Length: 590
Figure (cartoon, rainbow, N blue to C red):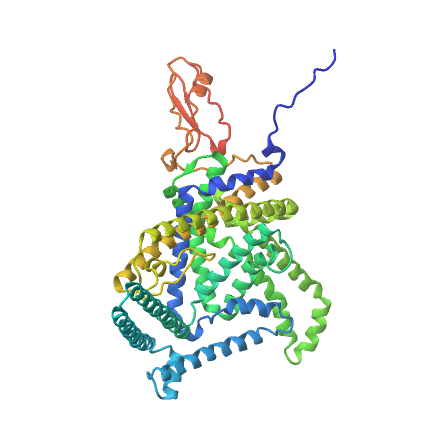
């Protein structure tokens, strides 16, 4: 008989193209618990960075555009060991201090040049500068208002009403045209004077890294993958330029900030990774309390996982370093050079190990946290698995990473557009209903909140507003920046979610482990918003066969799966670890 034709009724795209699992990342990343943890992590990191900035002296903080200039110096082949950068930074700092000293003398705050220069080095007398600028502005404003009142008085003496109205409007236009640049100039002068305090290292670093993230998004949208301001260029600068600048030129700050970052990343990043691990595998939402308990319990593993490979590199690097030191010692050096040449293969071996570890760390860093979150293991298992997956399937890992970057950039752009529209609509409708003016005669709402721009961030001109308007502007900025912070929270949540999915895919590819295999240690109440309520085990009547009772007593709730087996004489509970099939327990003979 002829074979019957077979009809394809559907294709399981996720099995055919495993990378499509990454398209679940957006839906999982926008879950409120992950966004909340991401926002807390971002706020904690920002607060800690600002505290560190406050502990540094002004002369050791950044100058305007310092990180960008360092990036340019790294592109310059003639730059030698950062000497050009150090010289340029020192020159710019001296120029800022010279301008500030000149301003102190011009405002009659310090007439002695030596004392003005000393105040500039210490960043003193900023309060006096502000007071003097306000006095000067008030004097100019009084003169402008006096001229306006004279013009209005003259307008009232005109015989024709139309002439009077035109003259009053002209006087108002003249006053506004004089007041607005006066207020702006005063604000700009104060901002320029504040440069003597330096720019916080965290502020400079955070602004640069944020711009690199935006650069990746722009490059993905424009299809610019290689070259200046491309995806590869922005990714390289994100991981190399910013951190290396901080490490080379502000070493102590780099160490303290790294410890702060690892602490916050371990607690909140580990919790996000844990929620994502359970969500991806079981489509269940782990509670924030349980996730934080897990990350705190694995705190040392999360912190040490990225540090151990670096420590290994440093230890192995001591071998060629020691060889170089011994070869430089008089009398011993010539003899040791011959010995080093004969045994140079050992130094090459040390270089091989360091290269292997560094490449494994760079390629597998994103898998370390998901490994601990999925397997419930320690840092050594995280390093071992991440290294083995990267070296076993490097091209598969690269494919998943590229898909995650492209999809993540599009999702980030969508969330950013959503937040931008939300802020724009709010600003427009509030401004349409507010007709009050600021003391500078500009619309009050635009001074309190200029509205969203491409950067989303903004500065408040407190010199223009009254004290009550200042307070309103501060409260408005709090909620605006909280909304803007959700963009960063989404980026953090998506990062851990996408990398968790990549870990599941790489584990399935290398170890042939099912995608729903995840370590569980929580009880049922630790799962929030479960997709289905946990089944309740029911006891079978006396005399029911054990196999039937076991089938009736199997639970699939949010916590670790258990099998309840009821016999005429005993009830046995057999836990199911990692979703494995429980062993049947036969009842004792009657």
